[in-house]
Image (tube, rainbow, N blue to C red; front, side, top):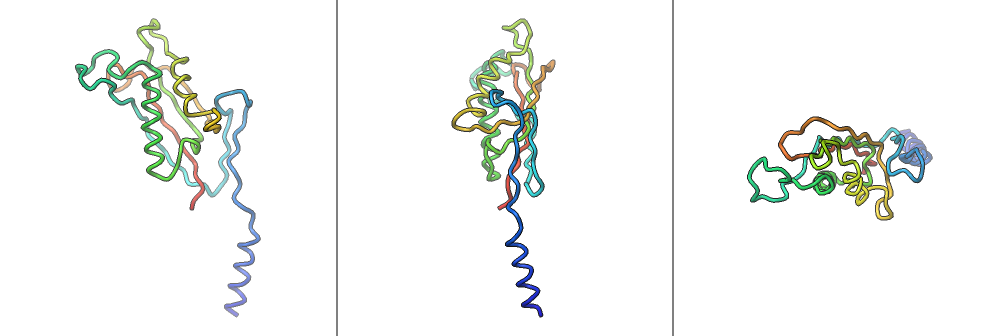
Length: 162
């Protein structure tokens, strides 16, 4: 009887459909997704807001541009996020949601450098090497945790369990 029950269970598991894939919704030409649908069964990784590394360790603390311009900071932040995701067996291609906070750039009369952020972003997302696009919000904020920081990014990634 147990053998029959086990055989029935194994047959039903074999007949189950494969896990659904993540769906990214929106125009092909857009570098971000309008929506991302993550089906049941995926593991979620929530990465806290990550700030940029210091680009010039010899600069006095708090010095303007200690962290570089917006593009440089974006690249530094995404590299940090990439390392965090890889430590969890994931990649930037698994990112389904991104929140970008930008401080106004003094060189742009206090306006956020959206173009600079996008230059850095496009090196990692919505390109031939890594075509997956997260849903995303970009907002300008008054300040971040240290003078000179102009970029903070948090992400959520979804991965199929192994």
